[in-house]
Image 1: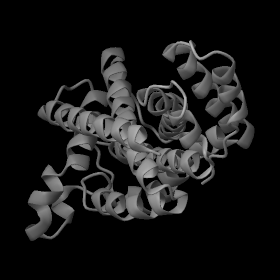
Image 2: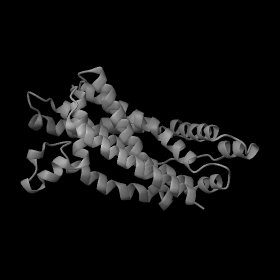
Image 3: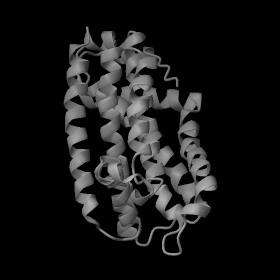
Image 4: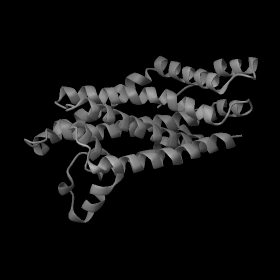
Length: 267
């Protein structure tokens, strides 16, 4: 994963005018990052990642797990969306760490730039990556039979997935800023994310796990979020929607506080 940055545009703007508003700083930083993403083809990578993972799981599993009531594509797609948001969050940690390694974080801290501005700019840029990943998941899911059963359910589905992604990205942004190591962030995040995904009801129903682990499988956050997204896709507002919102709010608040504090303390 790479997130190369060019500090010249934003620092030149700030150097010329120390009265520049935070909103202008935010637009300049986010625009610089988005241009880098487009130039390096990172949005294409974000789009293709859920496509590849969907096919890798759907092809070997759909014959044994599909039921007449619930097509496997309908069951699988929500956890692929969650998987995609996890994947994007690793890029978020990478981007924040590269800002530190490249000296951009230190230079911004020496200027009249509020700590929340770089964090928000990275989150804004990474939101484009999350949208690309979500679009890739929906395209491949639709090809294999995934369908939304109502427009309101689809809208809430998309909003829930994106807000979950933003919360994760802000939290991992703090990790990248603190460690200042692009490789470490992905390594630290990969194992817990993989364990959560593989011990969830995202790929296999809880009954497919040994009895001793089924309570964890049913109630852990990824299972709750996957169940919420399945319900929304079918135009059902299941109890897991509320549980998922509570988890997302918690991640968002803790991540935002940690990211802003980490940015503010960066020397």
